[in-house]
Length: 190
Ligand code: AMP
Image (tube, rainbow, N blue to C red; front, top):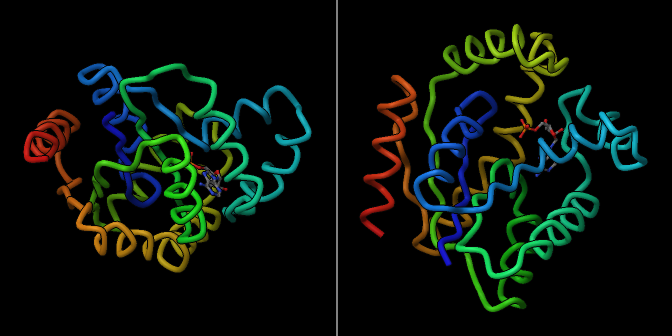
């Protein structure tokens, strides 16, 4: 299996690039953010809980997120692999993912980490808000919170995979096509 963690701060282009990677490699796309948003739309209990955190730019608690991720992975029968987009976002999630994947006889192949300058992130998020309707993209205060949470809680996950020799950093500035090319080339080196 080819199991990719697509990593980067909010606005790095994880969702957009996931679509390209799925098309090329036939992978299953698992975005915890997308799953939370569809639960919010469906007004489920999980949606209500997730919304109370997401609207403040905070992380949904690990226990909830990890349980959700496990049950999503188990929905697929003999997939070619997964793209984990927006997960893991804490070291506890990364640990739990390793243990869970081992229990189903697989593992993370690589973390592809998109590097994007902070001004560009904010610009992209505000632009996305015009079409996404996402409350957490439209409010500069929430954006700042999300970026702070990224630095404090999520960025350490990079070292988690670096210590396993699985980290590849990819320049995330430039056009969507240029970034896709860099990601494909990185996967070729695995
Ligand atoms: P995203 O669509 O990946 O930008 O995620 C939007 C929001 O969903 C985040 O700001 C968090 O509030 C929540 N979220 C998504 N993935 C996770 C995760 N792995 N752990 C905790 N919260 C998450």
